[in-house]
Length: 151
Image (tube, rainbow, N blue to C red; front, side):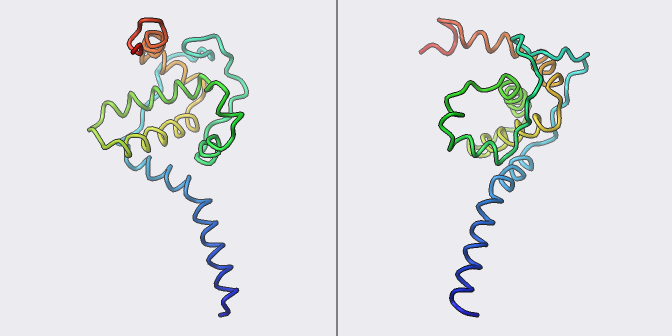
């Protein structure tokens, strides 16, 4: 095989590896999680847990979009949608109930579980589970002046 052919194969393998990396990290993160959280057994309300933000038009997260956000300055300036914030809260609560892991595994499994929740639950299920987990009260305590986040 010629050197040029080997170089092209190397480039293709490298590009494929980079393209597959977010998905592979997502799958690895999910394998680190024991079980999956269950949505709340409530009648869906269809509104955010803490705000009246409508739940229509939300696109579930995926590993590639999550990584792409870090390279888009406009996305970085925008407010995180309530759906993603609530899904992250649910994922964290689920992981708190499991044996402790090192920081890298915690972040990887937390991100993977957040993506999984937005892909497998409806926005109403996310809102109702966040409400059941007392997300609103905990989040508002962090945001008020003089709350726990004050340093």
